[in-house]
Image (cartoon, rainbow, N blue to C red):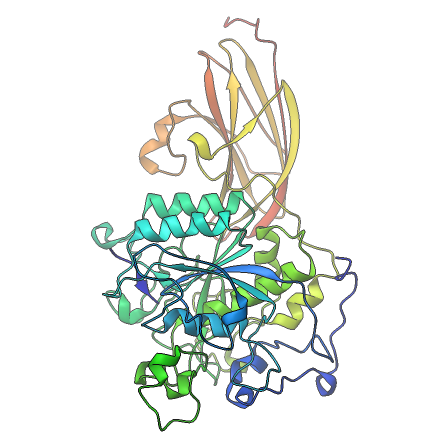
Length: 486
Protein backbone atom coordinates (compact mmCIF):
# COMPACT_ATOMS: atom_id res chain seq x y z
CA UNK A 1 0.00 0.00 0.00
CA UNK A 2 2.11 2.87 -1.24
CA UNK A 3 0.10 5.05 -3.54
CA UNK A 4 -1.44 8.29 -2.41
CA UNK A 5 -4.12 10.64 -3.64
CA UNK A 6 -2.30 13.21 -5.26
CA UNK A 7 -11.77 14.15 -38.74
CA UNK A 8 -14.84 14.71 -40.58
CA UNK A 9 -15.40 17.09 -37.73
CA UNK A 10 -11.74 17.95 -37.65
CA UNK A 11 -11.29 18.83 -41.31
CA UNK A 12 -10.57 22.47 -40.48
CA UNK A 13 -10.95 23.98 -37.01
CA UNK A 14 -10.52 27.71 -36.81
CA UNK A 15 -10.14 29.55 -33.52
CA UNK A 16 -12.90 31.99 -32.75
CA UNK A 17 -11.85 35.56 -32.13
CA UNK A 18 -11.52 36.17 -28.37
CA UNK A 19 -14.52 38.51 -28.39
CA UNK A 20 -16.64 35.80 -29.99
CA UNK A 21 -15.43 32.86 -27.91
CA UNK A 22 -18.12 30.86 -26.13
CA UNK A 23 -18.43 31.54 -22.40
CA UNK A 24 -20.46 29.20 -20.14
CA UNK A 25 -23.27 30.69 -18.09
CA UNK A 26 -22.89 28.45 -15.02
CA UNK A 27 -22.97 30.71 -11.93
CA UNK A 28 -19.58 29.69 -10.50
CA UNK A 29 -17.66 30.07 -13.77
CA UNK A 30 -16.20 33.45 -12.69
CA UNK A 31 -14.35 31.54 -9.96
CA UNK A 32 -12.94 28.99 -12.42
CA UNK A 33 -9.84 30.91 -13.48
CA UNK A 34 -8.41 27.77 -15.01
CA UNK A 35 -10.98 27.71 -17.83
CA UNK A 36 -9.55 30.87 -19.38
CA UNK A 37 -5.97 29.87 -18.56
CA UNK A 38 -6.46 26.66 -20.56
CA UNK A 39 -8.21 28.46 -23.45
CA UNK A 40 -10.88 25.81 -22.89
CA UNK A 41 -13.68 27.27 -25.01
CA UNK A 42 -11.75 29.64 -27.28
CA UNK A 43 -12.22 27.38 -30.30
CA UNK A 44 -15.98 27.91 -30.43
CA UNK A 45 -18.36 30.83 -30.67
CA UNK A 46 -21.27 28.61 -29.56
CA UNK A 47 -21.50 25.73 -27.06
CA UNK A 48 -19.97 22.76 -28.89
CA UNK A 49 -21.80 19.48 -29.36
CA UNK A 50 -19.08 16.88 -28.98
CA UNK A 51 -19.35 13.11 -29.29
CA UNK A 52 -19.14 11.32 -25.93
CA UNK A 53 -15.87 9.73 -24.84
CA UNK A 54 -15.45 7.26 -21.99
CA UNK A 55 -13.05 8.56 -19.34
CA UNK A 56 -11.96 6.42 -16.40
CA UNK A 57 -11.30 8.09 -13.07
CA UNK A 58 -9.16 5.87 -10.85
CA UNK A 59 -9.58 7.52 -7.49
CA UNK A 60 -11.66 7.56 -4.29
CA UNK A 61 -15.00 7.05 -6.04
CA UNK A 62 -17.60 9.59 -7.16
CA UNK A 63 -20.74 10.85 -5.45
CA UNK A 64 -23.33 9.48 -7.88
CA UNK A 65 -26.06 11.65 -6.36
CA UNK A 66 -24.37 14.89 -7.39
CA UNK A 67 -26.59 16.63 -9.97
CA UNK A 68 -23.57 17.76 -12.02
CA UNK A 69 -22.26 14.20 -12.37
CA UNK A 70 -25.09 11.67 -11.96
CA UNK A 71 -26.01 11.39 -15.63
CA UNK A 72 -22.38 11.04 -16.72
CA UNK A 73 -21.58 7.79 -14.87
CA UNK A 74 -21.73 4.74 -17.16
CA UNK A 75 -19.78 2.14 -15.13
CA UNK A 76 -18.52 1.88 -11.57
CA UNK A 77 -16.58 -0.65 -9.52
CA UNK A 78 -14.70 -0.62 -6.24
CA UNK A 79 -11.43 -2.51 -5.87
CA UNK A 80 -11.10 -1.80 -2.14
CA UNK A 81 -14.57 -2.63 -0.83
CA UNK A 82 -17.60 -0.42 -0.44
CA UNK A 83 -19.35 1.33 -3.32
CA UNK A 84 -17.58 3.19 -6.11
CA UNK A 85 -20.54 5.57 -6.29
CA UNK A 86 -19.98 6.70 -2.70
CA UNK A 87 -17.07 9.07 -2.09
CA UNK A 88 -16.49 9.78 1.58
CA UNK A 89 -13.19 11.57 0.91
CA UNK A 90 -14.14 13.89 -1.94
CA UNK A 91 -11.02 13.61 -4.06
CA UNK A 92 -12.58 11.58 -6.88
CA UNK A 93 -15.70 13.74 -7.01
CA UNK A 94 -13.51 16.84 -7.23
CA UNK A 95 -11.57 15.32 -10.13
CA UNK A 96 -14.78 14.25 -11.89
CA UNK A 97 -16.25 17.74 -11.75
CA UNK A 98 -13.22 19.28 -13.38
CA UNK A 99 -13.62 16.87 -16.27
CA UNK A 100 -17.31 16.40 -16.81
CA UNK A 101 -19.54 18.79 -14.86
CA UNK A 102 -22.52 19.74 -17.01
CA UNK A 103 -22.23 23.08 -18.83
CA UNK A 104 -24.98 25.72 -19.00
CA UNK A 105 -27.28 23.84 -16.63
CA UNK A 106 -27.92 26.83 -14.40
CA UNK A 107 -25.95 25.45 -11.50
CA UNK A 108 -22.41 25.35 -10.17
CA UNK A 109 -19.40 24.99 -12.39
CA UNK A 110 -18.59 24.14 -16.01
CA UNK A 111 -16.54 21.03 -16.78
CA UNK A 112 -13.86 21.08 -19.43
CA UNK A 113 -15.44 18.18 -21.33
CA UNK A 114 -19.15 17.89 -20.48
CA UNK A 115 -19.61 15.06 -23.01
CA UNK A 116 -17.66 12.78 -20.69
CA UNK A 117 -18.98 9.30 -19.92
CA UNK A 118 -17.39 8.48 -16.58
CA UNK A 119 -16.00 5.05 -15.74
CA UNK A 120 -15.48 5.07 -11.98
CA UNK A 121 -12.82 2.87 -10.38
CA UNK A 122 -12.48 3.19 -6.62
CA UNK A 123 -9.00 2.32 -5.33
CA UNK A 124 -8.61 4.48 -2.20
CA UNK A 125 -9.20 2.73 1.11
CA UNK A 126 -10.88 4.27 4.13
CA UNK A 127 -7.36 4.86 5.48
CA UNK A 128 -6.54 6.91 2.35
CA UNK A 129 -4.04 4.37 1.07
CA UNK A 130 -4.03 2.91 -2.43
CA UNK A 131 -2.99 -0.74 -2.79
CA UNK A 132 -0.96 -0.90 -5.97
CA UNK A 133 -2.61 -4.23 -6.83
CA UNK A 134 -6.01 -2.50 -6.73
CA UNK A 135 -4.74 0.28 -8.97
CA UNK A 136 -3.34 -2.19 -11.51
CA UNK A 137 -6.61 -4.14 -11.59
CA UNK A 138 -8.55 -0.90 -11.96
CA UNK A 139 -6.50 0.15 -15.00
CA UNK A 140 -7.19 -3.16 -16.74
CA UNK A 141 -10.87 -3.05 -15.82
CA UNK A 142 -11.21 0.49 -17.14
CA UNK A 143 -9.69 -0.57 -20.45
CA UNK A 144 -12.13 -3.47 -20.68
CA UNK A 145 -15.00 -1.04 -20.01
CA UNK A 146 -14.11 0.89 -23.14
CA UNK A 147 -12.33 3.88 -21.61
CA UNK A 148 -10.39 5.92 -24.16
CA UNK A 149 -8.68 8.06 -21.51
CA UNK A 150 -7.68 7.14 -17.95
CA UNK A 151 -7.05 9.78 -15.27
CA UNK A 152 -4.79 8.87 -12.35
CA UNK A 153 -4.51 11.69 -9.83
CA UNK A 154 -2.37 9.54 -7.58
CA UNK A 155 1.22 8.44 -7.31
CA UNK A 156 4.02 6.63 -5.56
CA UNK A 157 7.49 8.01 -4.84
CA UNK A 158 10.15 7.69 -7.51
CA UNK A 159 13.76 7.93 -6.33
CA UNK A 160 16.36 6.56 -8.76
CA UNK A 161 19.14 7.71 -6.41
CA UNK A 162 17.86 5.72 -3.43
CA UNK A 163 16.12 2.60 -4.63
CA UNK A 164 15.06 1.58 -1.12
CA UNK A 165 12.32 4.20 -1.24
CA UNK A 166 11.53 3.94 -4.95
CA UNK A 167 8.05 2.47 -5.43
CA UNK A 168 8.28 1.12 -8.98
CA UNK A 169 5.73 -1.68 -9.47
CA UNK A 170 5.95 -4.27 -12.27
CA UNK A 171 2.20 -4.86 -11.88
CA UNK A 172 1.45 -1.18 -12.40
CA UNK A 173 3.82 -0.99 -15.39
CA UNK A 174 2.21 -4.08 -16.95
CA UNK A 175 -1.26 -2.57 -16.49
CA UNK A 176 -0.11 0.63 -18.19
CA UNK A 177 1.26 -1.42 -21.09
CA UNK A 178 -2.08 -3.22 -21.32
CA UNK A 179 -3.84 0.11 -21.65
CA UNK A 180 -1.42 1.43 -24.27
CA UNK A 181 -1.77 -1.80 -26.27
CA UNK A 182 -5.53 -1.16 -26.33
CA UNK A 183 -5.05 2.43 -27.57
CA UNK A 184 -5.94 4.16 -24.31
CA UNK A 185 -4.48 7.54 -23.32
CA UNK A 186 -3.10 7.61 -19.78
CA UNK A 187 -2.76 10.83 -17.78
CA UNK A 188 -1.23 11.06 -14.30
CA UNK A 189 -0.23 13.73 -11.80
CA UNK A 190 3.54 14.09 -11.37
CA UNK A 191 2.93 14.25 -7.63
CA UNK A 192 3.22 16.67 -4.73
CA UNK A 193 6.35 17.35 -2.69
CA UNK A 194 4.51 17.07 0.62
CA UNK A 195 4.03 13.39 -0.21
CA UNK A 196 7.71 12.94 -1.15
CA UNK A 197 10.92 12.79 0.90
CA UNK A 198 11.32 16.57 0.55
CA UNK A 199 9.78 19.57 -1.17
CA UNK A 200 10.32 20.41 -3.94
CA UNK A 201 10.98 16.87 -5.17
CA UNK A 202 12.89 16.46 -8.41
CA UNK A 203 11.34 13.24 -9.68
CA UNK A 204 7.85 12.60 -11.00
CA UNK A 205 5.80 9.97 -9.18
CA UNK A 206 4.71 6.65 -10.61
CA UNK A 207 2.74 6.09 -12.82
CA UNK A 208 3.52 9.51 -14.35
CA UNK A 209 7.15 8.36 -14.62
CA UNK A 210 6.27 5.35 -16.78
CA UNK A 211 6.61 5.39 -20.58
CA UNK A 212 3.51 6.43 -22.53
CA UNK A 213 1.90 8.18 -19.54
CA UNK A 214 1.34 11.95 -19.80
CA UNK A 215 2.81 13.44 -16.62
CA UNK A 216 1.11 16.65 -15.47
CA UNK A 217 2.53 19.33 -13.16
CA UNK A 218 0.88 22.45 -11.75
CA UNK A 219 1.14 26.22 -12.11
CA UNK A 220 -0.51 29.04 -10.16
CA UNK A 221 -2.63 31.99 -11.28
CA UNK A 222 0.41 34.27 -11.51
CA UNK A 223 2.27 31.79 -13.71
CA UNK A 224 4.65 30.55 -11.04
CA UNK A 225 5.26 26.87 -10.37
CA UNK A 226 4.42 26.04 -6.73
CA UNK A 227 7.01 24.25 -4.62
CA UNK A 228 4.60 21.36 -4.10
CA UNK A 229 4.62 20.47 -7.81
CA UNK A 230 7.23 17.78 -8.45
CA UNK A 231 9.92 18.57 -10.99
CA UNK A 232 11.29 16.13 -13.56
CA UNK A 233 13.46 16.78 -16.60
CA UNK A 234 12.12 13.72 -18.43
CA UNK A 235 8.71 12.64 -17.14
CA UNK A 236 7.07 16.01 -16.50
CA UNK A 237 5.32 16.48 -19.84
CA UNK A 238 2.88 19.37 -19.48
CA UNK A 239 1.49 21.74 -16.86
CA UNK A 240 -2.06 22.83 -16.02
CA UNK A 241 -3.60 25.07 -13.34
CA UNK A 242 -3.15 23.48 -9.93
CA UNK A 243 -3.87 26.11 -7.26
CA UNK A 244 -7.02 27.94 -6.27
CA UNK A 245 -9.11 25.29 -8.02
CA UNK A 246 -12.90 25.09 -7.62
CA UNK A 247 -14.85 21.90 -8.38
CA UNK A 248 -17.59 19.56 -7.20
CA UNK A 249 -17.62 17.79 -3.82
CA UNK A 250 -19.88 15.08 -2.37
CA UNK A 251 -23.06 16.58 -0.98
CA UNK A 252 -22.48 14.91 2.39
CA UNK A 253 -19.16 16.70 2.81
CA UNK A 254 -20.53 20.16 2.11
CA UNK A 255 -23.60 19.47 4.27
CA UNK A 256 -21.23 19.77 7.24
CA UNK A 257 -21.28 23.52 6.53
CA UNK A 258 -25.03 24.21 6.20
CA UNK A 259 -24.61 27.97 6.23
CA UNK A 260 -22.52 27.92 3.07
CA UNK A 261 -24.66 28.64 -0.01
CA UNK A 262 -22.61 26.73 -2.62
CA UNK A 263 -23.58 23.22 -1.49
CA UNK A 264 -21.97 20.44 -3.52
CA UNK A 265 -18.92 22.53 -4.40
CA UNK A 266 -15.46 22.77 -2.90
CA UNK A 267 -15.94 26.36 -1.77
CA UNK A 268 -18.27 24.89 0.89
CA UNK A 269 -16.12 21.89 1.72
CA UNK A 270 -13.48 21.06 4.30
CA UNK A 271 -10.51 23.41 4.51
CA UNK A 272 -8.29 21.19 2.35
CA UNK A 273 -10.66 21.61 -0.58
CA UNK A 274 -11.35 25.33 -0.35
CA UNK A 275 -9.05 26.97 -2.90
CA UNK A 276 -7.70 23.45 -3.49
CA UNK A 277 -4.21 22.89 -4.81
CA UNK A 278 -2.22 19.94 -6.11
CA UNK A 279 -1.07 18.21 -9.26
CA UNK A 280 -4.05 15.91 -8.65
CA UNK A 281 -6.27 18.71 -9.89
CA UNK A 282 -4.02 19.72 -12.80
CA UNK A 283 -4.08 16.23 -14.33
CA UNK A 284 -7.89 16.05 -14.94
CA UNK A 285 -7.72 19.18 -17.07
CA UNK A 286 -5.26 17.47 -19.41
CA UNK A 287 -7.44 14.35 -19.32
CA UNK A 288 -10.44 16.41 -20.45
CA UNK A 289 -8.39 17.97 -23.25
CA UNK A 290 -7.28 14.52 -24.42
CA UNK A 291 -10.91 13.37 -24.52
CA UNK A 292 -11.85 16.47 -26.48
CA UNK A 293 -9.29 15.64 -29.16
CA UNK A 294 -10.55 12.06 -29.38
CA UNK A 295 -14.14 13.27 -29.57
CA UNK A 296 -13.28 15.38 -32.61
CA UNK A 297 -11.05 12.72 -34.20
CA UNK A 298 -11.66 9.23 -32.74
CA UNK A 299 -8.94 7.75 -34.97
CA UNK A 300 -6.16 9.44 -33.03
CA UNK A 301 -3.69 7.08 -31.34
CA UNK A 302 -2.50 7.69 -27.76
CA UNK A 303 0.95 8.83 -28.91
CA UNK A 304 -0.66 11.30 -31.33
CA UNK A 305 -2.87 12.71 -28.58
CA UNK A 306 0.11 13.12 -26.26
CA UNK A 307 2.22 14.72 -28.97
CA UNK A 308 -0.50 17.20 -29.94
CA UNK A 309 -1.20 18.27 -26.35
CA UNK A 310 2.46 18.64 -25.49
CA UNK A 311 3.69 20.33 -28.67
CA UNK A 312 0.86 22.87 -28.68
CA UNK A 313 1.36 23.82 -25.04
CA UNK A 314 2.22 27.45 -24.32
CA UNK A 315 5.84 27.73 -23.27
CA UNK A 316 6.26 28.77 -19.64
CA UNK A 317 9.02 31.33 -19.12
CA UNK A 318 9.86 34.57 -17.35
CA UNK A 319 7.69 36.51 -19.77
CA UNK A 320 4.49 34.86 -18.49
CA UNK A 321 5.31 34.45 -14.83
CA UNK A 322 7.68 31.49 -14.47
CA UNK A 323 11.04 33.12 -13.80
CA UNK A 324 12.73 29.81 -13.09
CA UNK A 325 11.54 28.27 -16.38
CA UNK A 326 14.02 28.52 -19.27
CA UNK A 327 12.78 28.81 -22.82
CA UNK A 328 11.67 25.47 -24.24
CA UNK A 329 11.03 22.24 -22.43
CA UNK A 330 11.91 22.32 -18.72
CA UNK A 331 11.68 20.26 -15.54
CA UNK A 332 9.02 22.52 -14.02
CA UNK A 333 6.32 22.54 -16.70
CA UNK A 334 7.48 20.07 -19.34
CA UNK A 335 6.51 21.37 -22.76
CA UNK A 336 4.54 24.20 -21.15
CA UNK A 337 0.98 25.10 -20.18
CA UNK A 338 -2.06 23.31 -21.51
CA UNK A 339 -3.65 25.16 -24.43
CA UNK A 340 -6.87 23.43 -25.46
CA UNK A 341 -7.64 25.77 -28.35
CA UNK A 342 -4.19 25.33 -29.90
CA UNK A 343 -4.46 21.55 -29.56
CA UNK A 344 -7.82 21.55 -31.35
CA UNK A 345 -6.45 23.78 -34.10
CA UNK A 346 -3.61 21.30 -34.62
CA UNK A 347 -6.14 18.69 -35.73
CA UNK A 348 -6.32 20.51 -39.06
CA UNK A 349 -2.96 18.86 -39.74
CA UNK A 350 -0.49 17.69 -40.53
CA UNK A 351 -0.84 15.26 -37.63
CA UNK A 352 2.15 13.67 -35.90
CA UNK A 353 2.85 10.18 -37.28
CA UNK A 354 1.23 7.33 -35.32
CA UNK A 355 3.20 4.41 -33.91
CA UNK A 356 1.11 1.25 -34.18
CA UNK A 357 3.70 -0.99 -32.50
CA UNK A 358 3.50 0.38 -28.96
CA UNK A 359 4.12 -0.68 -26.32
CA UNK A 360 7.36 -2.37 -27.38
CA UNK A 361 9.87 -0.96 -24.95
CA UNK A 362 11.71 -4.08 -23.79
CA UNK A 363 12.64 -7.68 -24.49
CA UNK A 364 10.42 -10.69 -23.85
CA UNK A 365 6.70 -10.49 -24.45
CA UNK A 366 6.90 -6.69 -24.64
CA UNK A 367 8.78 -6.84 -27.95
CA UNK A 368 6.85 -6.54 -31.22
CA UNK A 369 7.15 -9.72 -33.34
CA UNK A 370 8.65 -9.49 -36.83
CA UNK A 371 7.49 -12.28 -39.12
CA UNK A 372 8.55 -13.46 -42.56
CA UNK A 373 11.94 -13.52 -44.23
CA UNK A 374 11.93 -9.79 -44.92
CA UNK A 375 9.92 -6.71 -44.17
CA UNK A 376 9.90 -3.03 -43.36
CA UNK A 377 8.12 -0.70 -40.95
CA UNK A 378 7.93 2.90 -39.83
CA UNK A 379 7.71 3.98 -36.20
CA UNK A 380 8.61 6.82 -33.84
CA UNK A 381 10.84 7.54 -30.84
CA UNK A 382 10.60 10.24 -28.19
CA UNK A 383 13.37 10.91 -25.67
CA UNK A 384 10.87 12.00 -23.03
CA UNK A 385 8.33 9.23 -23.47
CA UNK A 386 9.54 6.40 -25.71
CA UNK A 387 13.32 6.12 -25.83
CA UNK A 388 13.52 2.56 -27.10
CA UNK A 389 11.63 0.22 -29.42
CA UNK A 390 12.29 -3.53 -29.39
CA UNK A 391 11.34 -6.12 -32.02
CA UNK A 392 11.41 -9.90 -31.63
CA UNK A 393 12.70 -11.92 -34.59
CA UNK A 394 13.24 -15.67 -34.88
CA UNK A 395 16.53 -16.87 -36.35
CA UNK A 396 17.46 -20.46 -36.98
CA UNK A 397 21.00 -21.64 -36.54
CA UNK A 398 23.00 -20.49 -39.55
CA UNK A 399 20.55 -17.83 -40.69
CA UNK A 400 22.00 -14.38 -41.24
CA UNK A 401 20.07 -11.26 -40.33
CA UNK A 402 20.48 -7.97 -42.17
CA UNK A 403 18.91 -4.83 -40.69
CA UNK A 404 18.96 -1.28 -42.04
CA UNK A 405 17.77 1.70 -39.98
CA UNK A 406 17.00 5.11 -41.48
CA UNK A 407 16.31 7.61 -38.66
CA UNK A 408 14.73 11.01 -39.15
CA UNK A 409 14.79 13.83 -36.64
CA UNK A 410 16.95 12.24 -33.95
CA UNK A 411 20.13 10.23 -33.48
CA UNK A 412 19.58 6.52 -32.92
CA UNK A 413 21.48 3.29 -32.45
CA UNK A 414 20.54 -0.14 -33.80
CA UNK A 415 21.39 -3.16 -31.63
CA UNK A 416 20.78 -6.92 -31.53
CA UNK A 417 20.35 -8.84 -28.28
CA UNK A 418 20.63 -12.51 -27.32
CA UNK A 419 17.49 -14.64 -26.91
CA UNK A 420 18.01 -14.85 -23.15
CA UNK A 421 17.98 -11.06 -22.72
CA UNK A 422 15.31 -9.97 -20.24
CA UNK A 423 15.88 -6.21 -20.31
CA UNK A 424 17.68 -4.14 -22.92
CA UNK A 425 18.26 -0.97 -20.87
CA UNK A 426 19.80 -2.52 -17.78
CA UNK A 427 23.52 -1.71 -17.57
CA UNK A 428 24.07 -5.11 -15.97
CA UNK A 429 22.71 -6.80 -19.10
CA UNK A 430 25.17 -5.36 -21.62
CA UNK A 431 26.81 -8.76 -22.02
CA UNK A 432 23.56 -9.83 -23.71
CA UNK A 433 24.12 -7.42 -26.59
CA UNK A 434 25.51 -9.13 -29.69
CA UNK A 435 25.83 -6.33 -32.21
CA UNK A 436 25.35 -2.58 -32.50
CA UNK A 437 25.58 -0.16 -35.39
CA UNK A 438 29.03 1.39 -35.36
CA UNK A 439 28.15 5.00 -36.02
CA UNK A 440 25.20 7.31 -35.91
CA UNK A 441 24.11 8.60 -39.28
CA UNK A 442 21.43 8.75 -41.91
CA UNK A 443 21.62 5.01 -42.47
CA UNK A 444 22.70 2.45 -39.88
CA UNK A 445 23.39 -1.18 -40.72
CA UNK A 446 23.70 -4.35 -38.71
CA UNK A 447 24.25 -7.99 -39.66
CA UNK A 448 24.58 -11.18 -37.64
CA UNK A 449 24.68 -14.91 -38.35
CA UNK A 450 22.88 -16.91 -35.68
CA UNK A 451 24.94 -19.54 -33.90
CA UNK A 452 21.82 -21.07 -32.39
CA UNK A 453 18.09 -21.06 -32.97
CA UNK A 454 15.96 -18.67 -30.93
CA UNK A 455 14.08 -15.39 -30.72
CA UNK A 456 16.52 -12.49 -30.89
CA UNK A 457 15.76 -8.85 -30.07
CA UNK A 458 16.36 -5.98 -32.45
CA UNK A 459 16.44 -2.63 -30.64
CA UNK A 460 16.13 0.92 -31.96
CA UNK A 461 17.16 3.45 -29.30
CA UNK A 462 17.68 7.20 -29.07
CA UNK A 463 21.42 7.64 -28.77
CA UNK A 464 22.06 10.80 -26.76
CA UNK A 465 20.52 12.45 -23.70
CA UNK A 466 18.02 15.07 -24.79
CA UNK A 467 17.97 13.46 -28.21
CA UNK A 468 14.57 14.88 -29.10
CA UNK A 469 12.00 12.95 -31.05
CA UNK A 470 11.59 11.64 -34.57
CA UNK A 471 10.62 8.78 -36.81
CA UNK A 472 12.54 5.97 -38.45
CA UNK A 473 12.25 3.32 -41.13
CA UNK A 474 13.48 -0.19 -40.32
CA UNK A 475 14.13 -2.87 -42.93
CA UNK A 476 15.14 -6.45 -42.21
CA UNK A 477 15.86 -9.62 -44.16
CA UNK A 478 17.04 -13.14 -43.34
CA UNK A 479 18.96 -15.64 -45.43
CA UNK A 480 17.34 -19.05 -45.99
CA UNK A 481 17.30 -21.33 -42.97
CA UNK A 482 19.40 -23.91 -44.80
CA UNK A 483 22.48 -21.73 -44.51
CA UNK A 484 25.16 -23.09 -42.19
CA UNK A 485 27.77 -21.52 -39.99
CA UNK A 486 31.09 -21.50 -41.88
